[in-house]
Structure formats: structure tokens, C-alpha cells
Length: 228
Image (cartoon, rainbow, N blue to C red; front, side, top):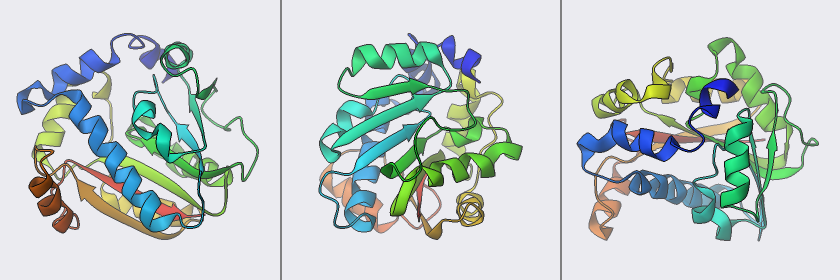
């Protein structure tokens, strides 16, 4: 997988944008929505930590990190694409990045308060899903969180965007209930999911309506979280 994403270290955003052009929305809108979903999870599920430490697994070029920098005391990112890591270091010099082989994360156990993987799991071979989540759990302290953001295969526009994306052609999309089950099998507790990106607007009214419908499985993406 590293070799695949090495090809897109300088064109990642443009490739994603071309896959979602039909929506009329910029890629930045979707990145901001992910950051907002993460912010809510931190506020509701990660209590008592003033400046949590984050590990972003499969961080790519670190596109979301400027949007979440203020939420964390420390951010680390790991990816199997060495070329993407090189770009991430240029874009976000205050973040610590590591390239790794894709099996064992290069960090001590219980080193972070939160580990997350954003639209990564669908690129991992299904036989490795459980091991991937177990590693995400290993590096999180007891009581910390593991978060996964994934495409919702029940949303037809999501499936269209994935079909149009060059590096998603072999992706295997996971339903939210599959991700919750994997989290439980990986030893995480109280796994929960909610959907977002249902309405194509950042207006406050649209955000309130979407929040009220977040349990309805129509949002373009979902966030799953479990306690380590």
C-alpha cells in the first residue's frame, strides 16, 4: 500500500477533489467535517485530559493536522508511504511523523490518549483489519480512545465518489456495524458510531439538523470510537 500512495504524495488533494467534483463542494469542506466529528468525540468521550496526545495512523500528507492542532498537546503521524510522510513534515513541521512497514506501530504501548485512522481501514486487507485495530489499541493508554472514520457504503454518493477515485478502486468499504464488531474483537469497550456529512452545507442550521440525524445511516461518512 505504501508504494500506491507514494505516487500521490504531491497530488493527493487534486485526486480526491476530482472524485467529488460532482458534489460542487471543495475537498476542504469534507476535511473540516472530519475535524468537527473528531472534536465532538473528544468532548464527549475523552474526559479529564486537558491536552491529549494523538496518534494519526495512516496520516498521509497530514492534511487534517492544521485543523486539529489546537485540540492536542502533541500530534504524531504514521504512514506506510515514505513519500507522503516527507510531504507531511514539510507541511506541518510541528508534528512528529514516522514511516513504518504497516504492521507494528513504531511507538511504545499506552503512549497516547487517542489513536485515529481516517479513511484508512478500507485500504487494509480484510485479513489484517483486526490486527490493525489491535495495534491502534495497544498504543493507547487504558481509558483512552481509538477512533476510526470511514466511508458509509450505504450512501450512494459515497460509493460514486469511491468509484471515481484513482486510489480507492480496490477499496473494501465497511459498514458501521462491522467496524463496531471489529473494535469489540480488538478489545475495545463501548464501541459507538454516528454518521455525518448528510447535508452539503456548513451553515449552523444545517449542522443542527445533521446532528439530530446522526444515528440515521445516510451520512456520507461515519465515526466509530471505542474505549481502550
